[in-house]
Amino acid sequence: MRTWLRDPIAVLAEGAERGIVIEDGRIAELVGRDGPSIPCDEVFDAGRHVVLPGLINTHHHFFQTLTRAHPQAINKELFPWLKSLYPIWGDHLNRDSFRLATRVALTEMLMSGCTTASDHLFVFPGDIPDAVDIEAEEASKLGMRMTLTRGAINVGTKNGGIADERLMQDYDTVLADCERVLHKYHDRSEGSYLQVALAPCAPFNVTKQLMIDSAALADKHDCRLHTHLGETHDEDEFCISQFGLRPLDYLEEVGWLNSRVWLAHGIHFNDEEVCRLGKHKVGVCHCPTSNMVLASGTCRTKDLEAAGAIVGLGVDGSSSNDSSNLMEAVRHAMMLGRLAYGAAAVTHLDALRWATEGSAACLGRTDIGKIEIGRQADLALFTLDELRFSGAGDPIAALVLCGAHHADRVMIGGKWRVTEGQPVGLDLAQLRHEHGEAAKAFLKTL
Image (cartoon, rainbow, N blue to C red; front, top):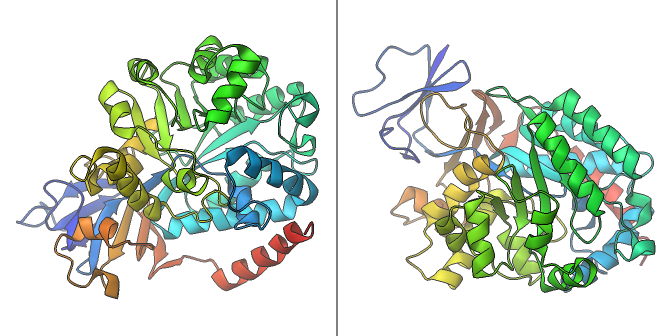
């Protein structure tokens, strides 16, 4: 079946003035002025749409949708914010609420034009040892691609950390489940829907040995590595006091300074560290919205790219962003970047590239992230019908500058997963009710 997405307003690709032909879940042809090279079986009229590659989210914490705008956590920086929320998560996070939180986060991202997600999962309450499996199930139901991160925390408040021990697992359990998850889900084939990365949470709440052994496992199974690094000055001070090293030096010491790695945030790197990250082709997931909410700082996106590092985009957790909207994060990345570098230095195309090609590279994927022949047919189609777009001259720039929030249609692997702004086969009203009821438990500590 060859399907022509015919005559869109604009496409973020060269040579696709008249659209895209999809065949067997891949992009088969970019259609120029003369139309498709051979007849198509099906035509979709894209005359109302601006077509982007499917957006790719490289950092999130799905469970945090349950504590958005929590009264005990608002208006705080990272460490005080975490200290407020960890006991609340420890008190109330359970199997049912975790599943709902995951479903909400994935659905929000899908509706914003996101086709591939990565969740930095590191909380494992006693009744959810199979939390990774729940995320795999929920992503599969929505038809989304996902990099499942098997994370962990194993340093809690009793040992000088800030995490709640009720969310932790012992070292042997963590390593055994990393092996299990890798064998079950890590599919390195082209077009795969599920892959796995190993993701100890952060230097301040995992042991050195867990970092070292995760790197060894990643090498054994050919998978990616992910962790938080360089997010705040508090983290710098912790690493210097605990390890006698700055965070990046510690990362190198445990065997993580290599091209398998992508880091969340990456704000507080000095010039020499930026050069080292570039030399080793490390990825950095920029989380602009979260960084502004927590006043953590500004990622040095352009400097990192100039040095050779990879820059992707993420929404971060939904209680440090309070939204799981990756298209919104694109706009924030552009605006925050302009404050740092100037109006001409960071364009809407830079921000879109970070959310597509850059994010794909962070996840180690070359089959998604760009509209070109042979890549997976993962596409986000936006309309310009809302009043906010009236008068806009450049359709692609308008999506970012005028603040697009929701895709009208989303295609993943050649299949429509969102139509007329609604996820296919999902009752949004019911999901909103069930998730809202579950979230009420997290306010009982007030």
